[in-house]
Length: 102
Image 1 (tube, helix red, strand yellow):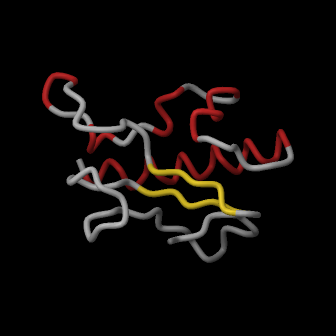
Image 2: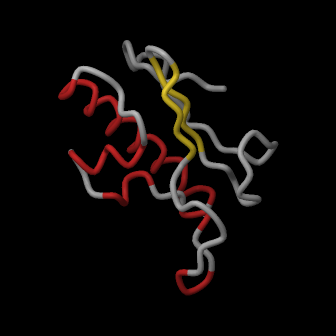
């Protein structure tokens, strides 16, 4: 499932950037993306257990940070800012985006 999280993080980055393009600022909360997309774009599938059991918050960690934002999967342990966190791999040619790796 870790391999499935990586492209989903990039989809979330794209949705966050589209939100900013549409509304002029980054969302306060990741759930604000519901205004432009369905809620599945920011679901951290590592937090969904067998047969839909939830081990914690289902969303990627998101925090607006001034003119940018932090976004990542909290990993298998479900705890942010630990060694198993997974960050989006942003291409250096992606242009001017607000993603900041913590």
